[in-house]
Each structure stands twice: as structure tokens, then as C-alpha cells.
Image 1 (tube, helix red, strand yellow):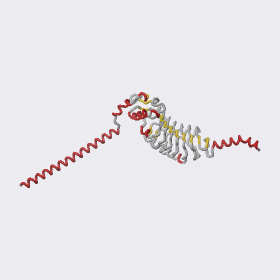
Image 2 (cartoon, one colour; image 1 turned 90 degrees about the vertical axis):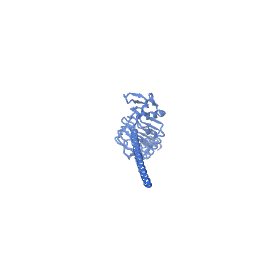
Image 3 (spheres, rainbow, N blue to C red; image 1 turned 135 degrees about the vertical axis):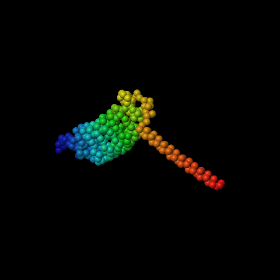
Image 4 (cartoon, rainbow, N blue to C red; image 1 turned 120 degrees about the vertical axis):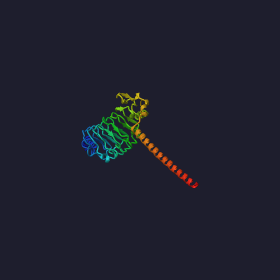
Length: 291
């Protein structure tokens, strides 16, 4: 009896390994190397797989053709901490889609077709530590409040996109930021870039290669120059440049001052006129009294 058991041990071990790796609720086209990991990488998927275990913690969906994420997709996966959607066909993430993942720590959306990162894209994923948004060749717009609420984010990748500018406010909302990658973007060295340049110089320790590996194009002739060759004096003329907001403030202030001056003049004239009439009346009464 015992020899038979010994002979069956390799078969039983293989059977157990197969059941363990596939998982009871593992999607048909995917692998589940452990009870909390679903690996669907490189499966040619054109949509998210069905029957993903509700207790999944690591979901690997890289190297497929997935074009979108349903806005309610992550509602049921409250244990998800690692989501890899790298190298798919995502062009847009609906605001709030990722806000339900309260435990999400790692998110990779690199190598997709994203065009913008609007306000509220990530909700307030306060557990998110690493966010990859690099290598999206059409990503040209990042809202100033795109990263609002990501108080634990330490690493942000925005390299090799189509960004010509970036509002500093988007980075200032990340108090835990330690590493940021911004190289490989078509930055333009205009006055809109001046504040970002100042931020990059002051936070060069957060850039993997400092500002040495970054370039921007001159607005006059489009020539690319390394940021290391620029200084604050390169943007000195921008300090004398008024924005549209500045012009509106000046115009509104001028109108307000003019209206106030007119009202003051009218009040003063009315006061003088009343005083003159009162003076004439008083003088007339005095003359009548003398007669």
C-alpha cells in the first residue's frame, strides 16, 4: 500500500499545484499563481476579463488591447492594492473610476493612449504610493487638481508624454512626493514654463537625473536647449509680462476707481450746492430781520 502512495506523490503534487495556480475562480484566459493574484498579461484581451475573484489584491492586465475601464469596475474589489494596465489602448479614465480603490498602492497606466488627466481622475486614493503615467504619446494636458488627495504618493512618472507645460500647483498637492520623472516631454520655454522651471531647480533632488536630462524648445525658433543651460534670468522678461487675468484686474480696478471718483464728485457737488442754498436762505432771513 505504501509503495503505491509513494508512487502517487508526484502526481498528487502536480494536481495540487495545478489547482492552486489556477484558483477556484480564476478567469479562463488568465493565471492565478496565488489566491490573491490574477495575471492576465499578454492575453490579447479587448475588454476586462469576467469572474475576477472579489478578494484579488494584484491584478495584472498589461500588454493587451483594453480600451476602457468601466466606471464601476473597482467597486467590488476593495482589497486591490496593485493594478497594472500598462501597454493597453486606454484613451480616457472617467473621473471617480479609481476613487473607490481605497487600498490601491500601485497603479500603472503607462504606454497607453491617454490624452489628458482631468480633475478627480484618482478621487482621493490616499493609499496610492506609486503612479505611472509615462509613455502616453498623446498626453498633453494635466489638470492642476488632477492629483488632489494623493497625500501618500511618493513616485510619479510623467516621462515621454506630449506635455509642453505643467502647472506647479499639480505637484505642490503631493506632500509625500520623493521621485518625479518628467524627461522626454516637448517642454516650451515660455513664460508659462517659468514657474515650473523654478520648481524643477528647487526640487532637482526629486528628479532621477536632476535637470540634466531635460530640454525645452525656445518659443522664438523652436531650438531645443538643455534646462541646465537656463537660469532664472532666462525668464526675467516674464516678470514684466501681464497675463489676461492681470489685465482684467487692472481694468476692473480702473473702472471701480472711476465709479468711486464719480460718486465722490457727485456727493461733493451735491453737498456744496446744498450748502450754497442754505447760505442764501440764511442771508435772506437775516436781511428780512434787519428790515
